[in-house]
Length: 404
Picture (cartoon, rainbow, N blue to C red):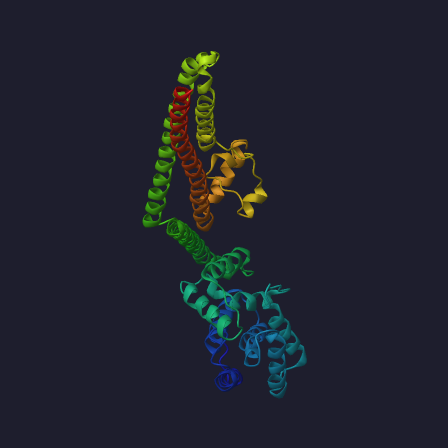
């Protein structure tokens, strides 16, 4: 490295410039980075056997290439060139050399595009750390700087992807840097790829766990939304009681129907044949009354047990509006299986709809039971009163016959 008063003053100027004017948020593009670039530039230039004048330009470009960070990160090269101009012209540097310093600084812009040997040296020195063993430590400083100074935040995966792409695209221009740094750079690149795969696998695992957890919560909520055991028991017992009452009503109606049928058959087989004789004319009215009572009782018994079936058709619109009770066969017996399955799925997934359907089932079953027992009460009343009146009619008829 050229060690004279001029370069000592340059180093001291850059050091004080960073110390006094550089933000503490700039953790990478600071004096330490500049010093590393200067040392790498000197090492590469000596290995490439450049002239002393070229070495001087390379070192000056290395010292000033990132001084623009004292103001901003974006377009810092232009600010760096302005700082170099103000200082170096005052120190008597020729404009010809200053122009070459400018071009070296411009060549460090990403993507790097050097046009000659000294520009290649400065570019390789600027990214010399890519092929060093402390690459991760240095690159993490750059990430922190992006977050603090540039307000550029990346996830771990995004940062690794950025490094993976950058290392994959980068190449050293000088023979010395290529031969010395490339093997370690490849190792660094492979480690980045390995870390990237691990991070992606970790994220996929976390995503899967979140998905499983979410599905578990969904199942838990669905379970919580199902009817609890107390409500299920209430509906089960109530429905069973209603069904038992319906069976009892049907049994009573069958008994009354059977008795009336027996009475009717006896009357038709025994009494009717005797009515065509003149001596038995007094039996006509009691017998007719007796038959009428039996027939009316049978009619009301049949009405109480006669089933009523609805249309058996519902629409998807009915399900959406919660108008149809799918728990009653009369509402779906004419529907296609697929439509019925869709409707039942909707019913099972909607707690309120399920409860309301059970309520409707109970309500309308209660209405049916009310109708059954009302008709049965009428039938039993007719039968009881009719039998009594018929017996009285027969007694009166016999008394009238005796008196005549």
